[in-house]
Length: 359
Image 1 (tube, rainbow, N blue to C red):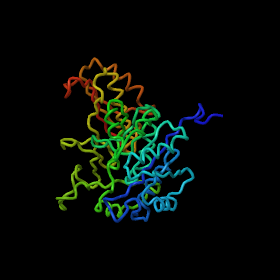
Image 2 (cartoon, helix red, strand yellow):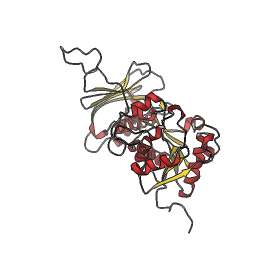
Image 3 (tube, one colour):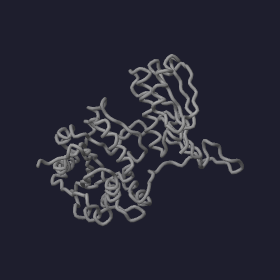
Image 4 (cartoon, helix red, strand yellow):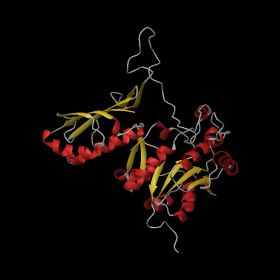
């Protein structure tokens, strides 16, 4: 018999956790061994999230203080699908860990590999599974999470990129490959966890105050609290600053928010297509895909839509819009909707859609 995945089975996606570094910026403490408020080491949180996901196998690349890190993982995140490997040349930088991990991945014939950094413990299994699902659908060279317009970690690489990853050199990851394939990436919206590492003594101190470990329950990355400063006790807070209000994502220029949550309702910006070269049908399809992704990210779905506002550059495109819209609608009810012709911000924009939804 030949090795590999039987033709009737979905090829697996492996998780590769890089844990070989020296943690020199937080010396003498090793950040990966630092416990959270519940006593779970940082690296164990990362491993727990990966093992709780659909990624298989989960491979941990060890190097500096390998025995201690392995023992911490086994004690707090032991799992039968865990594989350990050593990057003997880990002192050469991140690329050495990638090579060692990919060499261990080889025999398992995955369709892709999810590269996780050991010092990003706020990434949860939900995000990992969303990356895997998108990879299986699109098979893009890389599937990446995006927050506030910036890509982050983890990154899921398709198997076709493995040779390029093996060819990297020095203390670099796949950033150059991300740039090289910028026009072919699959992107999914994510929260601030994809940028939250703990590579300074101050950030490491903060990590020690974080509670439940991944796998025990949801953990939100640290975020500023809204509305506390300047609150007036003699009148109720306004919807934009009240204790039940949360700005989900604000544009860098601060003139709008992507999503505002208030008392269980989500109010979104107007979505436009990411690719403006398509016709009204293609642009509508892309917008509705973005709405699905945004609703999933914030714990709801299109069955809970209440209202939609649609703007068309040309009202003659209403039939094209309705064709896609009707196929997308949930079977058990449609939201209230308004559809108007309008002058939109960019001449290439043919459709813009805003929604209100409950959680």
